[in-house]
Image (tube, rainbow, N blue to C red):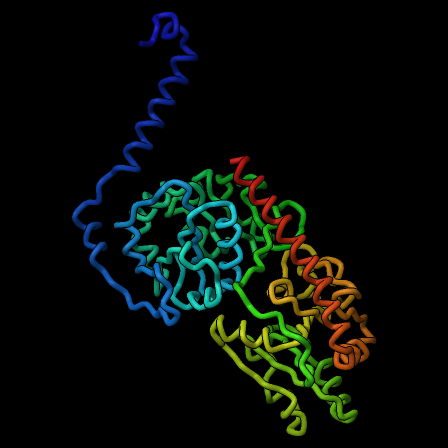
Length: 402
């Protein structure tokens, strides 16, 4: 029973009234029933390609029938890329004892091809982002019930979608900014705290949570024919690589270059016919195929150039996806010295070059023996483990501050 003395204090009464209103709002939004129009979405089905027979794969519409238990995390990826990050984020939450639910495009499902424990994850699949937009009101009610929500790609292109889903107003949301400059594009009425702003790199004004767990893979020894992995990316220069391959062919060195990418910037048409037996080009591969190409390779070439203005953000606001692959699969990298330290690469775990020594570094990578190669992998594993532990601790701190 509330005392008269308490009610006589106008300020305290006002605070009490506001608190009651908030409680009523929460009760209403959590328990509000679907109307007839919204209930129709429960019977909708979509085609799901579950080639690995994961145990808990559902349509996005099935989420409305699913009970959200305590200690549940939702990961939401609105784009058809960055799914190489999803297994790593999931692993962190599972390590902390949470149940993980993921809303993702069907194309991202293969990124979990070797994930363990896969039975700890429940997938809700959409085939078109319009399926999310169309039912934003109903989804926002479900989202409210999760302990935490991770928006895996915070991009201005979908800020309106986040707003319609009420994600920008939920205090227990985290946002991964793959481009930290996008932080300034958040609507002015929304004030994100630092612990809600995540980055894959160790940059200012954001928390580093680096997802580089891809599943259980065999750590391979060095191939007799040295294999290099490189991505074809827009606005990059591949002339140094082409010159190196021409020289190594004349030296009769045993090597091969695997090129994988979404962009046809670097293709078979960029090289002479005599060099084509040293290259394999694959584009728009599935995540499972991408992982397989990395596993088969010995080194990852991270083609960042300090003289290329487009690459400067990779020093302070962005991180290359190839860095994640190096950490996760323990593949030493070939990288320019201007970027090496940022990503914890050094001469003990990788090959570092300057503007004039790319060919020398690549030749050393080919000629190194298997024992020295294993030492580089062991040193890289120390870095990978340290980043994992640091990211896990950062994640725990972020959750405790909400």
